[in-house]
Length: 186
Image (cartoon, one colour):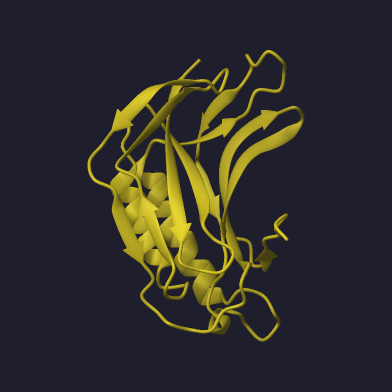
């Protein structure tokens, strides 16, 4: 079993928040700088007052069990603020698919990061994500993958937990479709 660093990026400032995006890396890589660059790009798609806090430290977990096994420290947390102030539809946006090439239980093991909301002007006339956004976000996500160490963690499927897996991300894709978040809050 591998030890993974867990990066919990906090979203705050918008209706429905706060929220989190969780990323994992192998125990030898530090993603703080690459994640800051990635979220700085996202700041051009989203609207103020949304901010992200990219952690400078966090937990380490055992990939086989999901149990907390320690902590990592890699510097200071970074706050990334959106650089535009545009209209948006809360809970509606796009996503990045993190591809691994691994198969688990007859399905592709992949991760997703939802970027919701994005600015209202970033959709095209067919109601999907504009080509410029798909191209730019794909480039930003690919740069994060290229930085190295980004992993997808497949949670254990048995009880007691013993068969979790960690697989390196090989590529990133941005589907040209609108996604939305749902809430269980009333």
